[in-house]
Image (cartoon, rainbow, N blue to C red):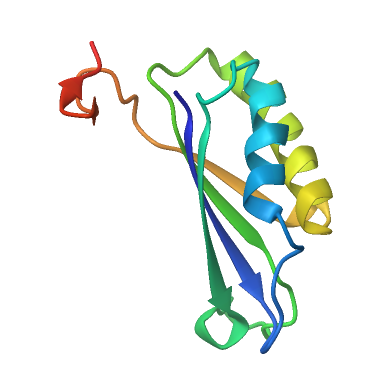
Length: 120
């Protein structure tokens, strides 16, 4: 069930590689060991002019992910998984893994509904 929101900071006039959403969905499905049609990716571009870091010029172009899972695995699994996610996303978007930042949302079970059906 992973739902992955990807926000890519891009230089003015830049974009992401063609086919990036599908490439991300496929790469993340491998990380999550998900069957076809079970990983959803929403990709948004954030112009660098809308991004800042304190006391630093906006020369770094990071990628932010928010991942919603039905249940969160152990912290040990999250640590391994987040590294695999950063590597997969970096490859798909031609970025460095160090610039891919992963946030796990609270578990979706009991609060997310698909087609009106609550995930229990």
